[in-house]
Image (cartoon, rainbow, N blue to C red; front, side, top):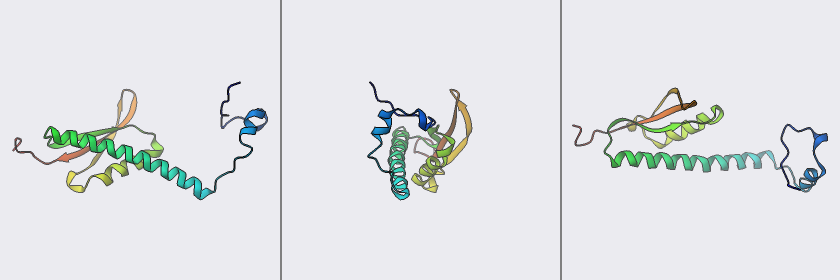
Length: 125
């Protein structure tokens, strides 16, 4: 018999004995421990996101991009969008004029384009 995790919406009376047994020896973490777990998860995701932004930034510098440039298309759930936009804004100093575009529909997904402004290069003057 294959083990499957119960749905959060399942009713207590409908849970199988196998499911009950697998949670018997587990304890509920403290509120603070669970907050820390969630915070650590976000920090890992934030690091991955900022690493992708850095990679995209250096791709722009390799081609001597100048002026307003799209650096990323953000498509995340509304409940976490603010965290991602804050992570974007904290990465770029004001000289880059980081800018978050309006909501657009791309491939039937809600997307916000993230922009930075690059300085003029020697060939664009």
